Amino acid sequence: MILKIFTHPEPVLNKKTDPISVQKIKELEFQKFIDDMTETMYVEDGVGLAAPQLGQSLKICVISKEYSLNHKDLILINPIWEKLSRFQAWDSEGCLSVPGIFGKVKRYRRIKIEALDRRGEKISFEADSFFARIIQHECDHLDGILFIEKAKNLEEVSKKL
Image 1 (cartoon, rainbow, N blue to C red):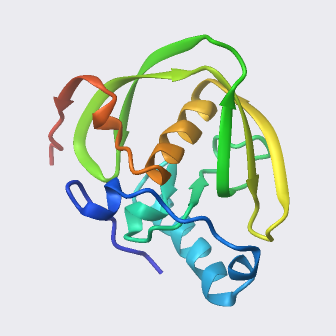
Image 2: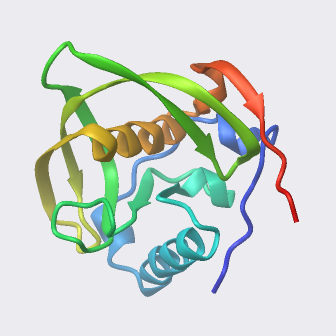
């Protein structure tokens, strides 16, 4: 089922999310939410999507299989990341919750992520380049931070029909 994308300035987008228990992860309703999140991300042409963007203050995000390590949709529950080097890079970002706005954001190039997967099992991996950027962007959502709060050179891009 396609879910509604909440857009700026909805208050849920600036709220720090709540961790998710393993018990909740195993509930059928939550598993359906994961599937709906993933489907919504693809229909809306996103590369990642976080629960607050769907009005849910839950610590979960999904990343498109196009950018994940094993080419499967990546589900990150209660993710935490740390930088693996001090090198950062500026690049253009946009967001489904801030439609039509793009800007340059500085992010770490290499990170390590620890999270739970959709079965509630611990996962740990490293990410770099665009994959690392997507994860940092989605994790910002889980901390109530929108890219426009970090970006410079914001510009509006209108869709031409």
